[in-house]
Image (cartoon, rainbow, N blue to C red; front, side):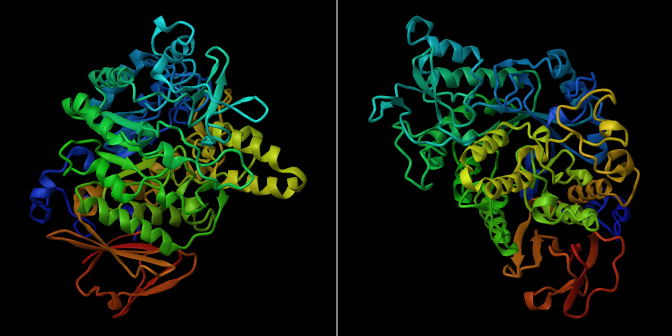
Length: 610
């Protein structure tokens, strides 16, 4: 069965929106908010579409492609930071929250984007970093001078420390916390004559949320954009805004290193729920908006319930983005130390989130790649040209049949993969640059072997993997920018058949499969709000699960291997005698089941209605 075989009006494939008698209707479904039913499309503006020939994407490029989202079936567009910034970390280092970065356009462009998005029935959310600013921000510039001139104010808007003295009388940072971008989380500032805290890059000082003035000013920023008409925010690293204020040393977990991981000391801190409740009450409760919060440095499913449960009398957040399923390939939590993983491990993580949140008043986000993570095909399956399209569709079928709000990252719907290359030119990301620099410095006598391991890690996990410009056409640079311009990041040649122009009118393309899935999901609400039951958890190849509501039941069977396989459905209480096959990622569905077995080809996935 091909992706083109599905049409909203073809009840043999999926429910028609007109078939009201077959639509699931329940009190719980009626109470769902718009963001719970949505498919959200994430845009990294630098790599989306350049309209002025400077090699960087811009706001006008998004405006020009709004009909693209309508055609795909998208409900919400999430765009990366567009604020004034020195751009050391892709705009997450903000120097003015109320100004638009001229690289991307003007405030008039932004207002036009909001207007045109709404005119098409779409919603727009902005990405914003409230944990830290850029060192260029006026707040930080004032704070660093306020030690000598207290009348300036804002001294306590950031974290400052005199540090301590080592055995030789040298001033050193106050603790051994390691930055997420390597090195110390503390940087000496000559103007202030003290160290300041930065969990991320040294040019990204952390704001002190314990200071009420800081929180009030940030709430004003949020209201500024909501009053302009945006429909909510993706809140960057939101669970880091409350730290352990005594700044104790982290325990030694990296032998031979001065700086130690301290995530539990600066994530999900002592006042985090208090601050989020206050932010909701002061800002978000007054708007019909959504909050999508990144849970950086780790959060468990039970912790996520505290952040998102509708049973919480003091509301905090609508949705969180967790990372457990994309950290399976990390050794002891170290992103750059690779490990092999098995399918049952991934199942157990997804199972816990699928069952814990919705059963306790929360709501899942379902995603597999974003601006900070490598491509899903490369991570969860294979880059093999033979299987690439099948893998893209398999993963789409997996993602769109799980409970929660779906997030897709630009290019995912085209089947984009990691380039699989290492070069200085392709490493523009601050995190990757810092890691490579540290690897070169630490390699020592084992340099060749250690550096090869570092290169392998960057090829597999570097953030620039997904930041490569979108291939719109077969033109130079994939039609991302003018043929004579130089893209800010080299445009990887995916081949003509993978560009949007080739896929949009091909009924068997990855893009068409995504469109069919999105439409099918909207017509079958059980797939985003129904219960989840995993079958045969320990099977190392097949992932099978049921999605159930009061009136409907679906079976999803996915072969996560490059070999043909079979699955005994009778042993797991499944009856296919009256089932209908709704979707498959294969062009044809051969006679492939017996009274007790389903036979699946390599990377084949199927969705049945039972």
